Length: 417
Image (cartoon, rainbow, N blue to C red):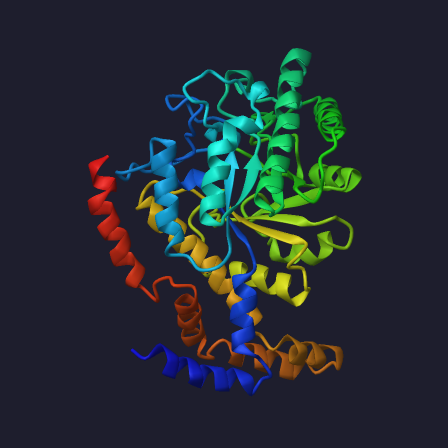
């Protein structure tokens, strides 16, 4: 099929609405999307591969071929990256350290334990983001980390949080692309608590201590993530939405908005323009909740498209940092990366192809009839031809052709693990 012929037709159609498709492609390619390393190994990491996953996190499925070493995980990601257009970052949890076979506890991690990740990122042109890991550890077994009422345990986790900031700063300095350091704790109660205020005061104190340490915002942007509930913390999450929003504004940090971390009737897309009236910026964790925070692979659904539209319509590309956060072990893990990241890119390209100036004029003029009519007609414009051209310019497979490449990699590499 002649991609260029189809693209020229689509280009002409979009031009009638004042949309430059070449520019839309170029701008989409420059928006970094941070892809989660933990999709490749089911959130196991390399600190203790035999450890138990805790903190209300569950991975379902047992599809063969998951990565079991750092080299395997990197190789799998490199292959996935060859299927995904656009600028890429890799989000790494603390448990993915390269400890060279040595015992390194969470309060002992340093930039040197992630040097091989930085070398790999430099070689491949990736940026890196970081996440302290406040779960899957003996000192998180009671369900409390930064809000723990045991001072020794709390200080252990505060030190871990501080060190994560420095590692993130190291990423940004070495790679020349700012690193987002996401602070999320699973702290909470399974049943109805009495001392919510005490635990939240303790969590606030811990963040005060972590953020008292300076890191250069040119290289590191800390972010604070809330959650409405978790498995084992159904009745009360210490880091609630209101808590984390207030804490982020207090410390001039980013607010993390995870698409699965709110009530079923809430949508993150509607929170973006509201949050950015007051907060420094937003870190997005885009996943697909199915009835709860189940972290299904991102699809090109209405909410994913709405999130991208809100970013582009508001001109928030520099203040909203896009990350993916899902993990599925029931299907090919590399395909999961490709499906989710390609869909995020599709949503961004769709947003860039919108004739926003025309739509805004209709709205500000009170012509809501034309606004609705145009929004509906836009849905059937030849987007697929522009997407194919975007993939061609990025040297990645078009349409469904990438699936055959994944199947070959599965047969040649994954099946032999």
